[in-house]
Image (tube, rainbow, N blue to C red; front, top):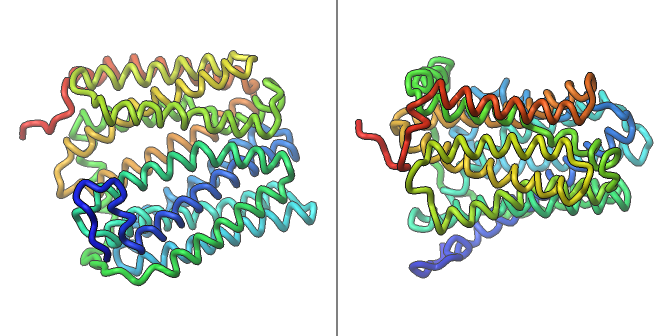
Length: 411
């Protein structure tokens, strides 16, 4: 590996293996965003069903839940680089299948859901492997720099990817899936070109008792339980991503490019707050800040649901992303500081499932409600539910509300 310069912001990129990994990860994340926007828009074009929009998220979430005992163990026991390459190849095959169905005029919902299930399976396996691979590619002194760049690459893809997906779908669904396929293939090649890194294999078998140890700790530690469950129910109720095709086409009349802007808006708000927190971290009233963030997320959701003006809808989504970042920042810091090292991995595994549940099941909740009562009431009621959750959790978890600084507790 190449030597890095002390204090170098690009230290991680001095190592060729990491540079290839970073590029592959960015391309894959970008492609996922393009596919997500395109499938949602095309599904609504073909079916006009809000329920089907919700099912898109459900079929991608279930594999990560059902395979929780397997995916982490595989990443610890086998070659992570090979796992990532195989998963990316499967992702490319899914993009190719969507491209084929589109060109053949066979965009049938149940077939698409089957493809999305496979897509969810590969992402379930790739997630732990990707998170664990980066530390194998850089020396410990450059690990913090690598982690920071990993986070920025995902946020950048989450902002630019949806816009690109909307613009490409505006040209044609074929163009969107073709570009996503090309990015996935290039990502596979880059990962294959990474020399096999040194890796310690796990010595323990993941079991139900080990997973349940994480649940047991969370149930005992009220601060961690409150932080995780607050985010779970707030996003579960306030999630409106699945319904954006409806708002873009039928309510705001923006078209595919407008859908891309709507999908990118929360990411823009999140990145702005993340940059602010990097320079001005929360030093006091952290618990209060978390509850305010959740409440603002709910208020932004209500405004988005009621808005019939594009600029107001985009502003509301940016507020949602910004306020959610405040909540995420406090929650993730609390989980790290309040969780003993010996159970941190299992607690984080539970947290990841909860985060996935809040996002994908939130989309399913929104789609199901919208199919029954309409998109606008589904979003507004969800936002009101988020406000109610913020208030109830503030009363139920006073320890969380009263946390002042984000320092490790005395034990």
